[in-house]
Length: 141
Length: 153
Image (cartoon, each protein chain N blue to C red):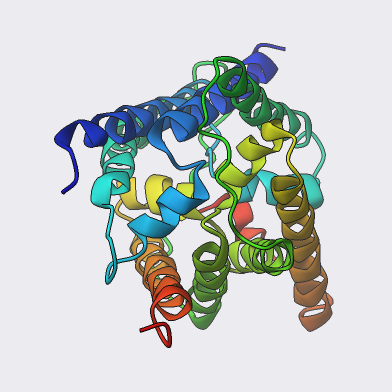
């Protein structure tokens, strides 16, 4: 049975993510969709590179802080490296094709009630759940 | 200068949220996606919290005549409604990668801080996949300037 207290960190973590999105939007006018930010680094346009690089640096910086405070939250890597390599390529290709990922479509788009983002989010969550089902259950029981 | 500091701070707050919520733990993410096994629903609260706050910000940004505090304009995608094959196919491909690894782009980049080989490998091939998509899109439409839908509609 899942403990009710285990729902508190995800909720507050989500609020922090929302605050980060609000900060970037209301001050700079930019959308904090991570795949969109990365896509703009890979395919730079004039004047669009620096803030993206700094946002990514902030992501890694926040991770370093989490590591320093002794959090074990970065890790538990059980996936074999070849699977990670394939999965990474699929995530990169798919998010650029769809124009967003969990943050761009799943949070920013859904919070604007964008039909495209809602469809995209339902699709990637449904497909990911199906993959997990096949990998972890099909054939093993 | 100020805009750069804001971008860095937003990235840091974002990744703090990812770490606190558990999104940077692939095994936890996979158990959130495991509806038919030992389903861990707690990560649904990440979306609830994030959407609740960002919905307010987007409502503010949608006000006519309001502009970002540091100038410029809001780079919010238009109200294009058409759901097309490109959107659904791309989302499905992303879903396969997410389901295999438990990693989406934000947590993957944040996890680079761990110094482990897994996230480094994942991020390298993620960037390669992004470049590959750009090349494929360009090959398909050699002249038409494809608007980078990547600004995450």
